[in-house]
Picture 1 (cartoon, rainbow, N blue to C red):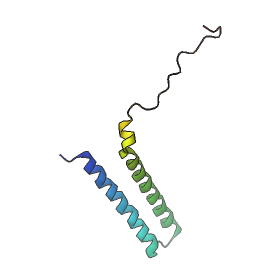
Picture 2 (picture 1 turned 180 degrees about the horizontal axis):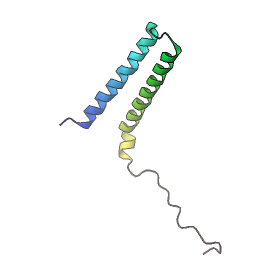
Picture 3 (picture 1 turned 30 degrees about the horizontal axis):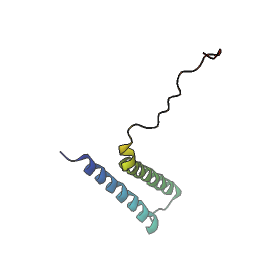
Length: 82
C-alpha cells in the first residue's frame, strides 16, 4: 500500500502543475474573452487555497498539537451568586 504522505505530495505536485498551466495560459495570450479569464482566475484561486490548506495540515506544529485550544469557563452562576 502507498504511504499516505506520498499521496499527499503527489496531490501537491498535481496542484502546482495545474497552477503553472494556468499561468502559462495567461502569459501566452490564450485567454481571448473575459468569461475564460474569470474561469481560469477562479480555478487558480481554488487550487492555491487547496495547496495552502494541505501545507497547513502538514506543518509539524499542527500535527503535534492535538489538544486544541479548549477553554473551560466553568458552570454559570445563579443570579443570587451561588
